[in-house]
Length: 146
Ligand SMILES: [Zn+2]
Image 1 (cartoon, rainbow, N blue to C red):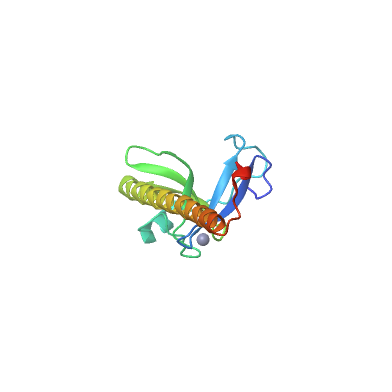
Image 2: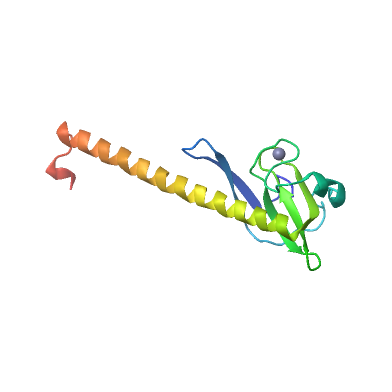
């Protein structure tokens, strides 16, 4: 998937915790033909050294997430991964337990994200309330405003 894929666009959001996340908007989930995603990394050699799928092998960012996954036999999953930090992407076949741990890690990431968003919404509200009370105190808000 290239950055110029007309079917999705990416917005970078910096969260209060300092994390930068990318929100990817998809117009449709279909992979368009033509340019194949990214050269797949052969699984076996990678799997040996891999203990956590959310950590990027190229830049050690822990923001790697799956773009596709499907069962590959009874105990394995074929997962296509992408690192939003360095744009590394690859497909590998991984053991069930590794994928389960990845899933838990993603859940944690989602929880952290939701916490951040709540904090962000709260901070915005506080900011607004503060501005409002300051304006009130300074008599900048008069009955005519309502
Ligand atoms: Zn990376």
